[in-house]
Image (tube, rainbow, N blue to C red; front, side, top):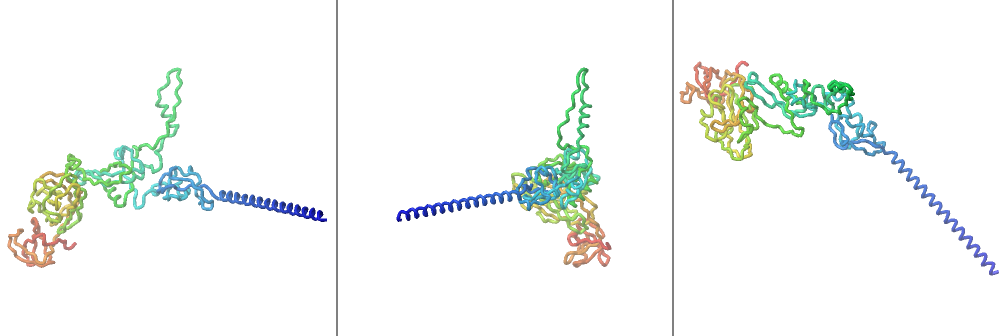
Length: 490
């Protein structure tokens, strides 16, 4: 009996063990199937995500407008398909050589709509920089630096005038660092038209020597592809200039001759140079002591009684201090006076700036000013001086000069400016009380005194004295420094 129970218990234990093992195996199989299902879902998700990304060409750098596209400017990125613009290109080759018609920023997708598709879109109106105007000038091979100027180059414009036009034979730079927009009919990004292969073969064949009897004529070889060539036959060059520059350019072309001077693309410096004249053409190209770097003479249209303001900037290019003398800056000359008449005679070895003008016969370069102080090496200073205009002057050229006293003119004819002084027939007293004298000297007797604001008819002028007529009919002289001039009745 007891043995039967033992066998029964053993059988039950075995059955339970087998059931437990079966349940455990079944659970493990479920876990494996779940892991495989999860892995499959994950792989499908990754595959789906990868399928949602597409290649898109983007700008690697900022690309200006009207710029031919190069491979180095672009790169390909994988972007979500939903982020790709409908016009974005996916192959870099599609963009190479195309010309942009708008700026493209780094990282921006490259769209087909941002390229110029034909010549009408790369025409002149599309490539003129903002704020500029396109002005064409007539040229020849000589004028265009041997015909080697191409669209996109930078040039300086030199004008040459003769004495009949400008009062003297001279040449000067009127514009610097100007961009060439077109040469003839050639625009940026276009090659100079070349002869067709057939034409080139025909020319090669016509130029070859005839074969000897029994020989076979060689087959002409097409020439290699050519880079854009010079255009010696071009008859116009179109420049990008500001509206003000366009006025000067057209006027200079009308009255003189123009020459284009090609400059390096990386050189943006504006050079200050005096104009070249027949009087200075044999002077040293580099002054041995100082150089005038800027000149201003104004106003250019004045009336007798006005004051001409002169500003001349000088730089010491020597390695020594340049001594100077009077008169100091701000000194006012009266028309007709000279540095000598005002007791500022030349001192040997001293430096001064001066103003000369056409018709000056009393003394060469009559209006002279010192620097105010000796000028150290490498230093610059601007000298301001004044000239009170006492009588009318027909349109005449005024210019600046640099002098090493007593007679060495280091620079001359710099900053030439055309000045016109209209006549005046009324003197207006500009001081509290002005003496009217019997003659044009300080020693002459005083015949009357007139208060500020009094208007007196002008009868004539003697040096820096005006001859006037008093209200009682008497005639006398008033110092030019005590009046301003006006024209009565327009």
